[in-house]
Length: 336
Image 1 (spheres, rainbow, N blue to C red):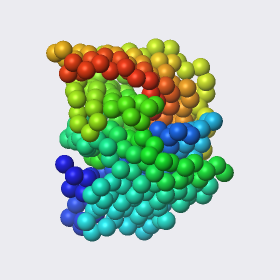
Image 2 (tube, one colour):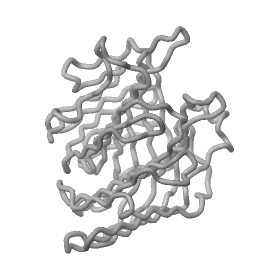
Image 3 (cartoon, one colour):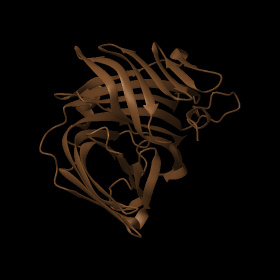
């Protein structure tokens, strides 16, 4: 599965396409030596008051070194340009390009700029047509990449030199605020020479009382070593991180959601068993940022994504080979 053949844009740009409810985003997480950096190019089809639809592009960049900070910028539909081969997306002066050997990302927002090239170390993996509330979503992810380039955020410049990174690409038709939530985590080792990487996904109902699907994907070098699914995975959260979010973006949303949305847990424990393979992992969040979006279901609620960074420890055995490493984690907790 090559990037150019699999990770192209799915946005309904043709005249015959059905845009209603469509959403798509390319999401990059850099586990940098000097901080964590999240870059997101997103497209959302929104209904207008006269019953038509419009494509709303956004670029989101948030970063954590001492604390989370960043920007969310919404653009006009006329600021969006998608290449004929669906391999490049320009939003204003920002650009994301999928090439056969990796991704090139250019960011130019108020107070945030940068150029990053991301080269996959592991193969992409796709999951198609999964239920999300009353809708459906597909995703493709690359568990491990190398990031090179620079980012200038909040007056600080960060150099990236083969820093480890993660990427996912999501698309589908669903409504923010419908009956779903999720926990999505990327785990990468501190030592770049360590071959192991992991990705966690759990889809739940809005109140997190039951899970609809869950999986733990474990990679060794560029190949999947084992995939644990459903009942093979046990996820337990405990406590609540005893600190407020570093920031809420866009800033006006803070007035609407403060006090109404849970934060992030103090700890996430993962266990997985399949045949002779076993994994145990812990994620301890240290701080988080909130990204908020108005609900598409209720005028009185919002959808909030809590982006948390912290430390991880993973132990176990896969295919007879021992796993034992400390690492960094970036977990996303969606509250509908």
